[in-house]
Length: 214
Image (cartoon, rainbow, N blue to C red; front, side):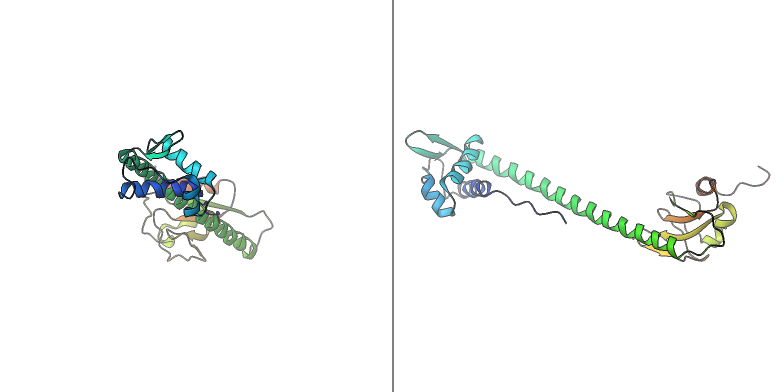
């Protein structure tokens, strides 16, 4: 699981000072307390406060006067800074959500691979030839959508033996029989009889059964 990234303290302080400017606690022209006093109030070092104020000064929220201190310069720029940070936070949240989904997908794919490997180990054959497992997805608007495996005579036309179907819930259904209904988007896991089986399956899904006279 990805480690959560924490926001540095000086950025949090900059956000807090900006928030107080927007609420009117620090009006424009206000002379902010010294770095040592602000540091004590936030429980951080004066250097951390300096970093926070530097951020706000670069954003033109505050301005410093040598020998005097730091003044609140612009509520408008404070609002712009707050909006920018809000947008950056939303982007980070979206990245975090995407990262979580990708990790879940990775875990799910690992489980699917484990299930397929387990089928390989438990599958019984009467031949010593190498067993080849293949996977293909039923295309959208495929002619066999809603039909059962038995209805379409899958093995008769492809010589591929279906050992599992991975549905829209991403769960591998094993030992599917002739009454199992196929749907567009299903991933069919099958055993190939020979090197041409995969091509026969693709042709079968795409074109269906050609009439003998064609």
